[in-house]
Amino acid sequence: MNDLILVWSDTVLDLADLLTDVQDPAYIVGGAVRDAVLRRPIKDVDIATAGSGIALAKRIANRLKGDFYALDTGRDVGRALVDSPDGKLIFDVAGFRGDDLEADLRDRDFTINALAVNLLGDLQHVVDPTGGVKDLINKTVRRCAATSVWDDPIRAMRAIRISVELGFRIEPETLKDMRANVSRLPETSAERVRDELMRMLGLGKAVAAIRVADAVGVLDVVLPELTKLHGLPQSPPHAFDAWEHTLATMEHLNDLLASILPTRTDETSAQFSLGTLVVALDRFRQPLQEHLSKTWADDRPHRALMLLAALLHDVGKGVIERTESPVTGRLIYHKHEAASAEIAETKLTDLHFSSAERDRVTTAVRHHAPAEIWTPTVSPLNVHRFWRRYGAAGIDIILLTLADYLGMVGSAVDQDKWLRAVENAQTLLHAYFEDYDRIVEPPALINGTELMTALDLKPGAVIGELLQVIREAQVTGEVETVDDALRVARHELDQRA
Image 1 (cartoon, rainbow, N blue to C red):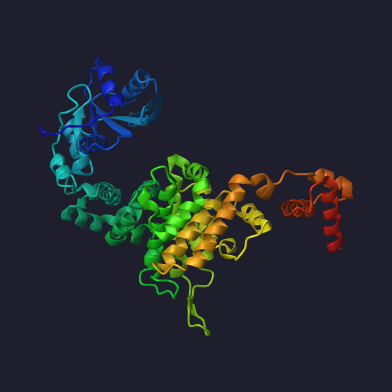
Image 2 (cartoon, rainbow, N blue to C red; image 1 turned 90 degrees about the vertical axis):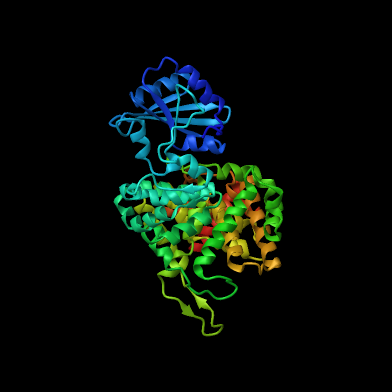
């Protein structure tokens, strides 16, 4: 332990100097200490104190010129949100869980998280009552006590996420406890299960986390419909069963998103299929990054939500009756997209996702193979109608559709079909990001009131329908003036008469 060198940010070091007047003992605990040992970036700092958590959090916010929030007045938990050179830094401060620091640490989930350093003293001296430093060195996730997972079943999911994130193995007895307690996950809140699932999907190796979750039995409890995809046969050009196809789709979507993000490397585009896509989409990289940087309720990242859509995009195949084509013998999962969307809606509701998140996921799942991607040519009117139907969700649909194809064919990519899909994706994204006012949402030449006055019409659905006809005629170039718009509207009314 004496050979350890903990790496702390300047903000944390400054804070230690700014709190010399604090009387109650205060310790940095948990993941921040673990990450300081591993020299990983630290975004969240948990502090345990013998005094008031809310009072200390307020003092930290004042000293570092940040914002203060009382997270839980009943349990005396406060938060300071501070700007640092490395981005936002969160300090969550709470009183000791037990009578003292050691009791607090022993009550934690895993030994590698049961570490502490004295915020008001030596930031290089680790308090380690459960052997967490040794487990860090040995790259092992181990429960703090024999009852750790029993006490809080969500720790079964957390162990998976931590092990995949850090590249650690789960110690056998801990793994045994995880398997024994996953059936008790419904005893914890839906919100906690949701948040752990989203943290898994937010990992760079999300598919590895899902594979472990499946093997341990987490999916049997949280998303049981997915387990029905195991071994479910699919006909060519599908190269995999429904479960392996789902994971392959997630993997390809993950790679695709990585090719868009600022952290893209040269290796990202080494493969033909992904390389052609990187080149085609490079001009949209900045707006795509902005799209992916969106966060939902409680700062859940959009990228993780897209991977959730990929995880659920074919889940309906496991619950509908499949048929066999009498001509080709191919297996057909008729209307599986709708069935998948219905399951996704139910599961996201059960897990207390926001209505906006549910809408986004179900839209992507229901429409993940739009004709506009596969048609030989996509016209401006096709493009306009695509974006009118889906809005910003259309971006997710495009990316999921491309990943779905790669996850379907394996190494047998039809180069002509793939290049056509990439070209159509480029056309669709060009309209949305670079030609929005002409193709997606042309400026209105006439409004509903003016249309009713000019054509002596009464309010009703027909007004909106006529405005849509005019809008589409603007896209095709048939309408450029108000007179053109009225002419097209009159012609449409005559056709309906």
